[in-house]
Length: 164
Picture 1 (cartoon, rainbow, N blue to C red):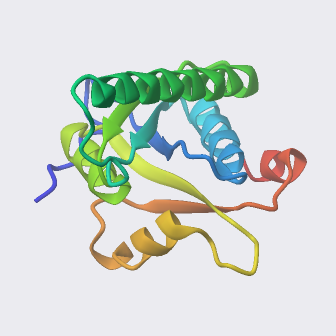
Picture 2 (picture 1 turned 180 degrees about the vertical axis):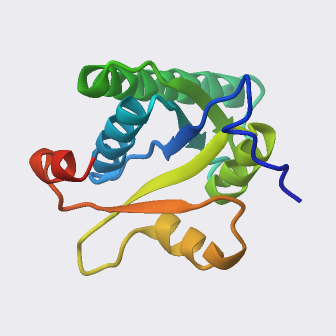
């Protein structure tokens, strides 16, 4: 059971949660959430999930080296998108790195941070569909703990500016 949202209570402020992945449309979610957070005085949390399903048992020490490299790469990607958000709207997002299944880690983070008010995802616009994360999470939209905002991946900065 997810904790009650406290985003608008005294001492709290709402946050937009953006999942940072390697899809081309990820930038659209960052742009939209940055603009909305900047205009509304909200915060922003960027989550990068390192998927561990591809890790096979490794020789002693090799798994630790691989994990450290993945952490460094995740931190670099988050730093790049945080700089983008700052350039868009003058905000400094919180950065979170988790390991595991993306859908599970998103839900855990929402449960842990009672100020997260909206999950912002960008949907791919190719013939293969909106992307695996969007597909997975929208299947549970009716029971999801917070609202989700889906940003069409084809929208330009100017189009998103007009909406935010």
